[in-house]
Length: 365
Image 1 (cartoon, rainbow, N blue to C red):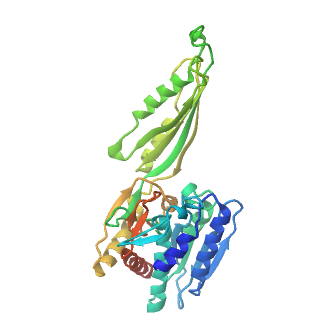
Image 2: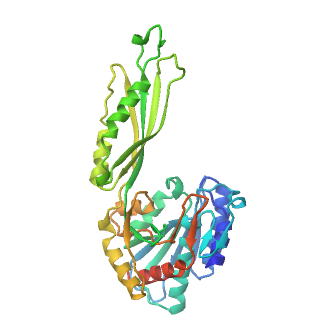
Image 3: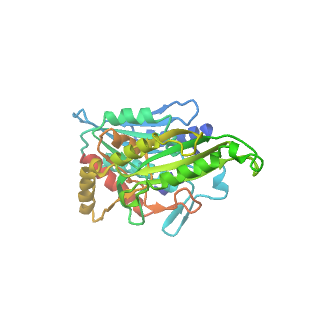
């Protein structure tokens, strides 16, 4: 498993560098092709090609399908390996993208090996889909993965687990981004301040307004994290803008926040306000994961493994499949820490455990 993980990690695959991502996709596709499954690369114009693998077990009579979902793109630019090389130190393996989420793809590969080698009965066709742009919003892959999910009885997402105990993610917050744009009126700040309409003041008042929407106990957070406005200190600011991060744990709260956003009105007389954007991924509520988690927990217990669950603050493609009402279980990937950082790592000995749990789930779903 470490050998394959090393090969996948050395094939750098930044979301925004198509040539590099395509090379990684080819390496991964070749490795999957050794298993006698149907492998295809789905061409993309500006992003890396997506990888679709289909395994129809011998003797399968059911028309059902299971979807195993993940991404091979990473947040690291080409050349990162020079300062952040793949290495194994003690119980951990380090490298760009090992945790998020190339180890999850490796674990899936070996879960398939386990099923093939033990000739375990699997009653449904399985589609493995590895996409190239999850880290930047899944724009090129969303239609594809949603189409596959609609044909599936369940979706298993190989995103990393949560925390050192490897909790599965049975719920995820909905995620979005909104932009507030204010148009004011420029004027000399000393000679004629009364003739101006200060866009910076208006955006500040709007931020103070939306700050009151936060309800951390309910999992609702609204944060203005980027703000720009004005030109010179002695000029009444004519324009200002803020980019706001949106999070909600419940679909009902997501809709409430979006309604409030798009009904905002200017506070200062004469100011004009535009609101763009909103939630891009709906919350993954626990109800879509509950039955699958119970199954996973029972199967893991039979192996002497204790599985826990948690709610993740970030989104994944699991949000998209859950929003369709398809049973979805997330966080089945690697156990480790440090995603998107120089200390990204996985715990090596957990890899076979996670592969075994996935194999058991595929055989019992």
